[in-house]
Amino acid sequence: KAGVTQTPRYLIKTRGQQVTLSCSPISGHRSVSWYQQTPGQGLQFLFEYFSETQRNKGNFPGRFSGRQFSNSRSEMNVSTLELGDSALYLCASSLAGTGRGYGYTFGSGTRLTVV
Amino acid sequence: DQQVKQNSPSLSVQEGRISILNCDYTNSMFDYFLWYKKYPAEGPTFLISISSIKDKNEDGRFTVFLNKSAKHLSLHIVPSQPGDSAVYFCAASVAGTYKYIFGTGTRLKVLA
Image 1 (tube, each protein chain N blue to C red):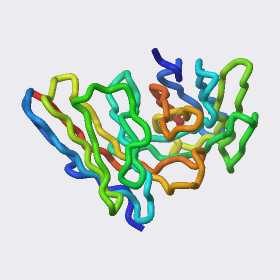
Image 2 (tube, one colour):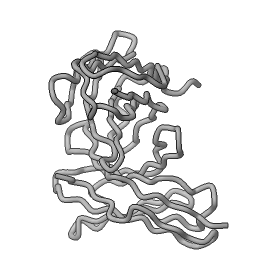
Image 3 (spheres, rainbow over the protein chains, first blue to last red):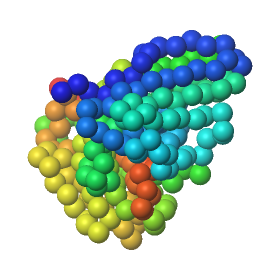
C-alpha cells in the first residue's frame, strides 16, 4: 500500500514568488493535514481538510492556503514568499472516523528554501 | 505560546536500559496525546496515543503515562534498542478538532 506522497521533494524559490505543494494521501484516507516544520519550532499545524472542506486552521497568515480535491489529493499554496517561509512542509493523512487518537501517516515532506 | 513542551532537546541511553521521554502541556482542553518518532529525511511515524480519560497505555516496548493533575505525559521505551535512535515528538489534539499541537522534539540516542 503506497504511503503519503508529497511532490516535489525539494524546491528553491525567490522572495515574492508563490509556490504550490502537492500531497497524495493513502488510498481511502479522506482527512489531510499540513504542517510546517522549522528548527526550534517543531511542527506547526497549518490546516486540515476533509471531503474538500477545511475543518481546522492554524495560526498562519492568509498567504498560506490550501485545498482538497474530490479524490482527497490536496495542495497548499504560499503566496508572496518570505525568507521565513523556508521550512519542511509535511502532509499527513488519516482515515476519517477512526478517532483522533489513531494518529496520522506523514509523508516525507517538501523542503522549501526561499532565497 | 508553546502549549506543548519537550524541555529536553536530547537524551542518551544505553542499549537495554529504559528510555523516558517527557512532555508537559498547558491546555486543559487537550483530549488526546500522541507520540511520534522521526528519522532523518522521513516524515514522523505514529507510535502510541492515550486518551485524556486514561492514565496509561501500553503497546509492546512502548508505554505512555498521563498525569493530568501535573499536565505531564511521558513515553517509556523498555528495553531501548539502537534502532530507537530518532527524534520523538509528543502531540496533543484540541478537543473536538483535528488540530494537533506538537512539541519541539527530543532527540534520543541509544548507545550500543
